[in-house]
Length: 359
Image 1 (cartoon, helix red, strand yellow):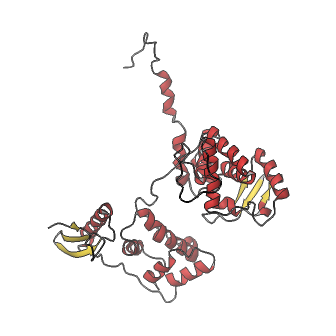
Image 2 (image 1 turned 30 degrees about the vertical axis):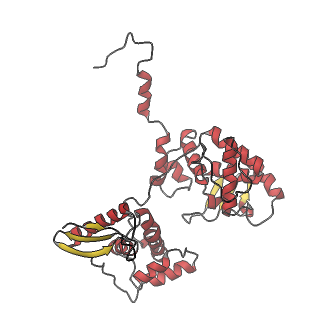
């Protein structure tokens, strides 16, 4: 019989099992690792693909060789973390690869993702396996590190929601009334396109309003860059520096209170009363600006740069906010294509005489 799902059995296993025969290969029952039928079906299809490709399941492990004279994954991972690299998800990778020689083969990386995290989405596999492996190899091998190919669907659903000026300015005005420093922080996000964490990390000494600039020492992609400040936020930042004390430009820390400030500003714009401190239990009311997050200010900056500033994907990438044009090209949709000029040639309502038929 073909591969089929076996429902969870109370007292024995909470997960769906998979068993049956595919292409004459008989599969003894294996766990899908999930109690959701939809995810279990995805795992069943993945097992079918493995059998079709290798004629067996599990697939044979990719050959992992050790190289006495060269860097190993273990040594490279340790050096990477000692130099400030993120430790998240690295322990499981060290246990899997051990003293494997670098660079790792693509098949070995794919095998690690399938073995360590068989029932998660490609986006999660990318976060847990592909991204840290790529970072470790780049740290150890530099320009000689091969490109690690991510699986299809690794970026998940690309979100590019943005705010029109009226809404963006209204949210910032509301934030000014709640906390002037928070309103200034949102202005900086809106007019530089930096990420939430990048804005919170700016050092006090790196803000130079007299030069219309701010220095971002560390970004998500690891590259420092200079930010240009608009004239209309230079003076507010200068006033803020006169009275602000501390190591960082803004006093805020990422957390529940910080996020609640944005929620209060959004609800204020929508005319909905929001408690200063969120009680427990409390459910966020429905409102038209529910899509707005701190990251929406980044999308808004990029969209405005294209709509009002005339920047193309190359120009957005040139600011340093994205590593390449491919990442910045997601904002192409906000600019009407030239073909839309033809809409002016369509018949107008109430004027149906004298229409020229194009043959």
